[in-house]
Length: 197
Length: 194
Image (cartoon, each protein chain N blue to C red):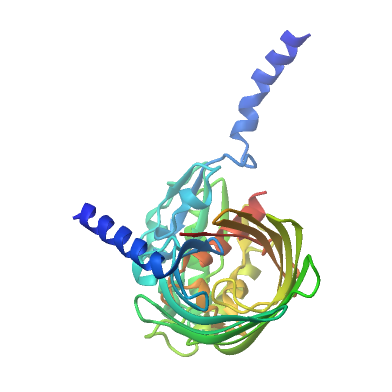
């Protein structure tokens, strides 16, 4: 049974990779995802939380987004929805992102994210940030964000680096709350990576 | 000279090992389902830990452990299952005395006592968190100056927007904690242990 399932998964990945691009990865240390980009523009992502909890309390999220660019400006717009497997809470929202690449090594980006969580209610989240390419395979990142790392919207500063080697990218970051008096205690280390087939 | 230094270290080291400030000193976690569901080995890898949590436990469970914690460092979280025993001014005082007696009768070397956490389960009365706040405040007053008990008041770390609304991401079912809730609980204990 396991062999059949593995063969099926590999066949699906191989076939879909032939007409698009498949990506697997980890987001913010606690979410695994499987992504698929069709014709360089349409991106679909299935994200599953990896909390040390029973399955009933895990979260599954579906995202669909359109990616494009006009000159030195990259943009994306998408929607997402998620639910706890037990069905006690749900989230949903829209994410619109833009990035200016006017300078050779500097990229300025901004995201607006109207976000609804059935337990936290509605919040308009956003982030503004910059990315500097040190060398071709290493960039330094910094941003101010209110987009939830996990579920709750908080004012945080993210700082880190992004490493790209072939089809693999790895992004370790620290996330520091802005408003808390106990910044060090509430600091998080977030690790993300993605591999494209 | 080296020989003597080695002997001195060998002689004095057992005293340091038995000292309760030693981060390696065993911790006995005692309480209700919030403790029972806590993977204390994962959250305190540098300590020897024992989880004596029992789902549904109340003050009678602590009373049943009388005298069993002699020489131990006990970490206690109890009281949420007994809120109806301290929901009036008069019952609060009686229950608080019973509560502290039960804890002292454990005969622990040192007690790390967590406050009762806010909750919002479906069947809970509307004013449950007001009852819990009053109880926590009263216990904190009673143990002020007791060097044997370190009170860890984490109640407000588990609220969101106002003092009676729980922070949903810290709970798995509005009563029991999520992994993020347990992280917060562990951080507060590590803070006082270090």
